[in-house]
Image (tube, rainbow, N blue to C red; front, side, top):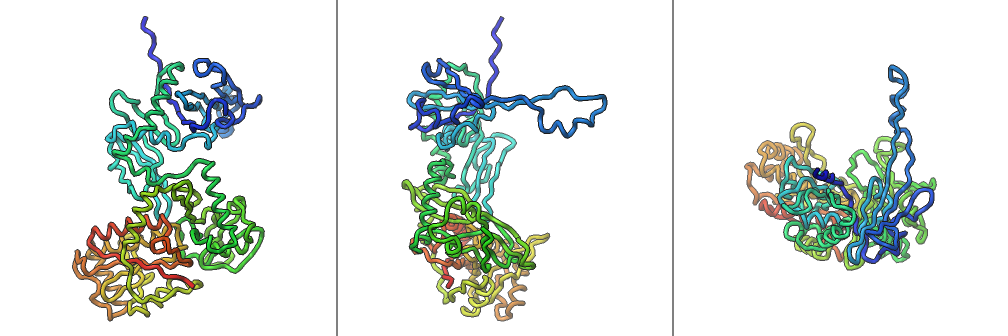
Length: 537
């Protein structure tokens, strides 16, 4: 009788850092204890060291049982018990270790012990680029958006509409070519179906390490090296210490590479001001969160990581000063850039990101090359809102202020044509740097407005009417026909509290990424782009 075909198992593989081996088991898994974790020797993997670690589990009724128990006709239910299992199997691959996890075993593996991009690199080096099933990405925009995009059939990466300059690829599921690993998914871990016997695991582990070290991914996915979310706890801890050193440095110049910004999109029309909340301390609210004020309230040398993560930034309602419109951890509001281990690292929205030097140079070089808006714009009053500045700036340059004069697009969607319009057709969009973590709303507004001016005749008519209502002297500035690109110029003005001469237009890195994307779209559409930084005093 033929032997039954062995059923495939879905195995989750982690690559242990090369500096850790069997002698450092405690650095890989939680230290074994008699109560919860049991260690076993597996001679096929290592004759002298334990390789298998299992967490004890105890059968218990599932939580959902209480919902139906006592409501079933005909008496009691049969005994229903469940138990969660957790296991880790260490597999040698020449001079490196890999860890296979079972059940909830991933929670037993120390994240600082494993290579964070192992699964992603193996997948991208192994799959057929035309057989991608799904991708997980993080987009840096007005909101930092996490998305999982799936296709009804295997497809190329272009189907998933990623923006290589702004989307951070976190995980990919796809299928390898014939004779390969088959269907596999990867992020920090690699999930792959396998029917190999245990003694064959070391050979498979060697193949996976080789697949990780390969460079084939650069043919189709080289952009993943541009920007990565940093998940190594050791590196994150070092970066957090650099953040604390800057915050606690008596030299005020140490704060030049950071500012505070609400980490999500909010309606500033509903918010009168913001304030810090900790230890019942009260202070006068301010228009925007200021890192200098936070440091003053906490005290130089007194800021700790625990305090950054427990102290809050509160948004005070414009209608009722006793009502809050939002509350965020100070740590999540910090936008901070620092160099570490030959990379630029950026803290944004509570997460650290590693930026390659090549990508940094490309982005900042492009933005630095954008021409400056040459108009005699006034400095901004730190205590005043954008609308006050827009009105004053429009008067100073002989323009018309169109701030908050929205144009409907049908339904609930509305677009702001611009904040200030000049007689030569320059549509100026203005934003405070602290108003969003990436200033992407500013740049998106410029693209959306220009796109409508080029392609929507009704929008053109409505825009001309709105401008005429604001100032009849500007009648005729808005084009009357679609496609009149020569009559449209777009300018972005950033109001910033502190100058950063080493940064193009004083912009944080992710803001530069979004500006580059917006400017490239506008330039490809045949529209001139200008930029200006104005200091708030």
